[in-house]
Amino acid sequence: MTDAKAISDLVASRLRDVADFPKPGVVFKDITPLLGDADAFGDVVRALAARHTGSVEGLDGLDAVAGVEARGFIIGAALALELGVGFVPVRKAGKLPGETVQRTYDLEYGTATIEVHADAVTAGQRVLLVDDVLATGGTAIAAWDLLSDCGADVVELATVVELAFLGGREALGERAVHSLHVVGGVGDA
Image (cartoon, rainbow, N blue to C red):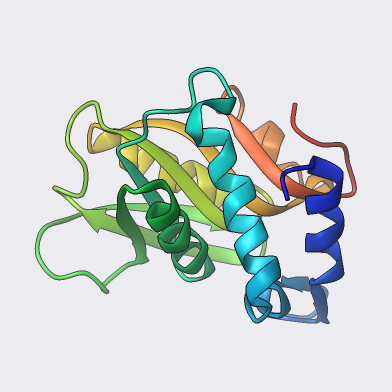
């Protein structure tokens, strides 16, 4: 399934809203129903992969997929396997052994620090950054900059869901963003 509307509708049908999580006033977009449906999850991974197999100019020829902890790991690892490339985990601080590079950033409900191994990528490697949801963009910007600091050429941020009303795409500026399902806005800019 590669039709954009069909994929968006599929994702929407497998989202669950969880009110007041992780704090009062936040409506968490839970993708676990999507992950629990093997056919739907496979369709999502194949739709994300299709953009990086010669169908979109400049997005093919990846060397790695980087996924942001925790749900970005699930999607990113499956996508890396589908694309036949390696996977780079972008972890919460203190979770990786050895030398790491870190970034601290603001979330819509606090702050966080993420890290990668200092040797996670080599100079010039083309990396696709993946996460489950794009909200305010803080996590995505921090992860993108972290990978760039390590020498990666980050080609795009790919997400399953984008919460357009929180302005993440705008916060990312000129960085390329692709979202399968957009809540409160229009598709790719």
